[in-house]
Amino acid sequence: MQFAISTIIDEVKNANYLNLSKCISFLENQQVGSSDFVLTLQPNNIPVIGITGPPGAGKSTLIAALIGALVGEGKKVAVLSVDPSSILHHGALLGDRIRMREWYLHPMVYIRSLASRGHLGGLIKHIGDIVNLLKSVGFDFVILETVGVGQSEVQVVQVASPTILVLVPEAGDDIQMMKSGLFEVANIFVVNKTDRPEAQKFVNHLKHALSERVGVKTDIVETIANTGVGVSELLQVIKEYHEH
Ligand SMILES: Nc1nc2c(ncn2[C@@H]2O[C@H](COP(=O)(O)OP(=O)(O)OP(=O)(O)O)[C@@H](O)[C@H]2O)c(=O)[nH]1
Ligand SMILES: [Mg+2]
Image (tube, rainbow, N blue to C red):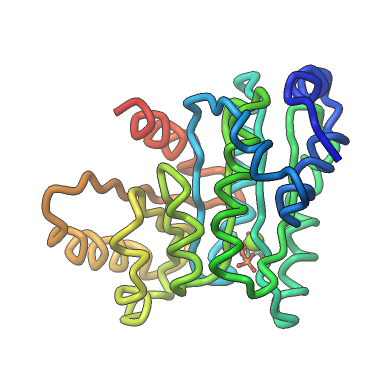
C-alpha cells in the first residue's frame, strides 16, 4: 500500500480524514514501505502538545476545552490518544470518547486512538513517525494524550513540545509522582480541579518543589477544566513556549 502525501494534504483541507487514518495504521503496523514513506515527510513547525498525568486528573476534559479554544481561533487540530493496553483502562477510554464526543465529527478536528500494546520500544518510534505525518498534512496543532505516571509516558511525551503534566490537588503528598521522571521532562505544570479545597496549598507546595529546577523555564497554570477556567491562559503559555 502506498500513500501520496499531497493527496492526504488535499483531503485534510476538505476535512476528509479517511486516507490519513489508513496511513496512520500503515505506520503503526510498520507495513512494507513505511520507513521509506516517512523519509518523504516534510513536517511543519507546529506545536505538539504532550499531555500526561495520573488517571482521572482531567486530561481529556482539558483537551476538549483546548480543542474548543483552538477551533474558536480557526485552527485545525489533531489529537492522538495513546491507550494503555491494560484492560483496567477500558472504562477510562469510553469516558474519553464521551468527553471528547462533541469534537469527533467536527471538520476542524481529527481524533485518533493508538493502542500501546505493550510494545514499548517500538511504539515510541511509531509515535514519532505518526506525529511527523500529522505535522506534514496541514494541522495547526497536534495534541498527544497519554495516561499514567511511568517511564513509558516519559518516553511518549518526549516526542512532544511542550510537555504538560496535569496534576490535581489530591496529589499533594504523591512522592511517587515527583520521582516519576515526568517532573524532569515537563515544561508546563497544570494544576487542574482547583475548585477543590486545599488547591492553593497544593499549588504552593508545587511551586516550592519546582523552584529547585535551575535553568529550566517552568510554568504553572491553574485550571478548572470542566468549566474552562484557566484554559485560555494555558493556551497562551503553550504558544509562548512554542515561540521561544
Ligand atoms: N471538580 C472538577 N472535576 C473535573 C475537573 N476536570 C475534570 N473533572 C472531572 O474529572 C473526571 C475525570 O476527567 P477526565 O478528563 O476523564 O480525566 P483523564 O485524566 O482524561 O482520565 P484518564 O484518561 O482516565 O486518565 C471527570 O468526571 C471530569 O468531569 C475540574 O477542574 N474540577
Ligand atoms: Mg483521558
